[in-house]
Image 1 (cartoon, rainbow, N blue to C red):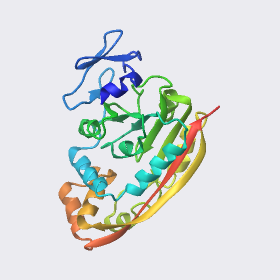
Image 2 (cartoon, rainbow, N blue to C red):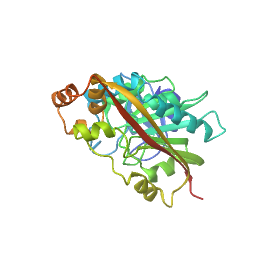
Image 3 (cartoon, rainbow, N blue to C red):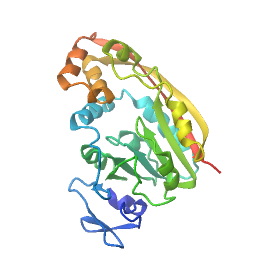
Amino acid sequence: MLDEVVGLLACPVCGHDLVRDERTLVCQLGHGFDIARQGYVTLAAGAGLKFEGDSTAMLDAREEFLGAGHFDPFADALAEVVAQSTAVEERAIAELGAGTGFYLARVLGPGSVAVGLDVSKPAARRIARADPRIGAVVADAWGRLPIRDGALTHVMCVFAPRNTEESRRVLRGDGTLVVLTPTDRHLAELVSVLGLVHVDDRKLARLDDAARGRFERTGHRTVEFTMSLSRGDVANVVGMGPSARHLAADEITALAAGMAERTDVTASATISVFRPAR
């Protein structure tokens, strides 16, 4: 809920602290931001947001696929990395591009609070109900984050944009940036058969380039496993990812219908851990 995290938030217009005033978050200069009845707030400056983010259909597919447990090993590994990265149990975590809030809810420990940021309002509605300790915020992960300087113990990016400059600003000096990126083996069986969007094989190199001067990589691990997916699962995993931006819903359904009744598919990603550079 927003009440749990308002102390972490900052005005996107002037950067001052925000406080809650009934159905509005307001700063000392009078900039106000209405809280939607679904429990999220949009924190955007100027002309507002430039991107729409994931559609309702994409988020529905993601919610169903993740709810079936197919990516649980990723969530479990992230929770382990976050827990091991600090001795502090009362963590303040933000996830950029939080989607449905699935991963963020899974990494919370006792006494922790979190901010789930996403550019998509349909995503924010889901984040707002993912866990009472999570505050849902609509914001552009590529812009200035509406979070106070040095307010967080962790920033997390899971299959999502990585704003290393802003991550460094909002993290404490002993904070941790956790990034999960797919390897070129991720969903390889579907990529080759269905002609899906390929994973950039330079993702890790580009991540290190973006982090240089701001962060130092302190560890990484690869999480890889095999999933047995039905045709419906295939449709969901395609429908929740970047290929859904290029394929219509009926095209995705037709592609999945051409698959075997069940298909073994590889899930593969690298979790990278970074500390602020000294």
